[in-house]
Amino acid sequence: MTPETTIDAAVALIRSADGILITAGAGMGVDSGLPDFRGNEGFWNAYPALRSAGIPFHEIANPASFHDQPRRGWGFYGHRLQLYRDTLPHEGFAILLALADSKPNACFVYTSNVDGQFQQAGYAPERIVECHGSIHHFQCLSRCSDELWPADARIAAVDPATGLMSEPLPHCPRCGGLARPNILMFNDSEWISDRADRQLARFEAWRGSVDRMVVIEVGAGVDIPSVRRMSERQGAPLVRINPRAPVVARGHGVGLPLRALEALRAIDALWTPS
Image (cartoon, rainbow, N blue to C red):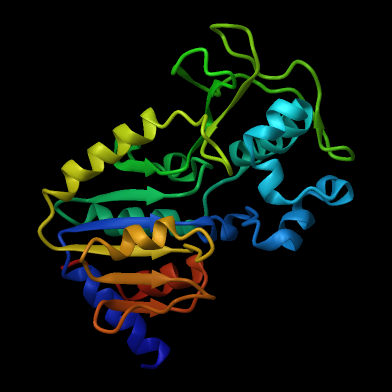
């Protein structure tokens, strides 16, 4: 297929659906200016203080970082929280939402991203599954209870030279101990999954109401393939948007070797609601 006919095929699949499952990984946020932490080099380019300390992504994105060096753990996640608060979602989010709004069953979102960009772009919170949790919710590090609370308060500054957060660090309103983001990290037996479990139950109910679903997968990586697996096990046609790994099993959909915004603009240019 030529690029043009591939886009045509993707639009045809979308047009035939009565509901859209949007599955998204880190590549969805790149066009908004967010880092995707692809490999240690990409991660360290975004966090030079951690490069200087020789700390790779899997060590800082780990509950141990809060237990062992809480100012550094919060330095990393506090910077990310402020970055996500300040970042505007790119135009592709609006394109996908407009496609969904043309369908009787609209859409559901399943994402491994913890950034809250879909909510910020106007998607209904009750139609989103955040399978790895959300940086916009906190939990107690010592798990004095299973309570979660929104990360609405202003956080302390992070020193970019050291990567450390100033005191006071976020704390648990119940016991006064250290808080952490409600995010599934590496080697994490302490994550409270209740919120994500409720989201998934709502998705399953929605899934049962859709007769002709199409999956639009955007920027989902192969190293941690949670999102790609979710896309593939739906048994529905798949439009996979990924500049590095666009392959779809023969007969199961269309792969677009493009970045998120480029692909979604191309789809939008050909889209005419039926």
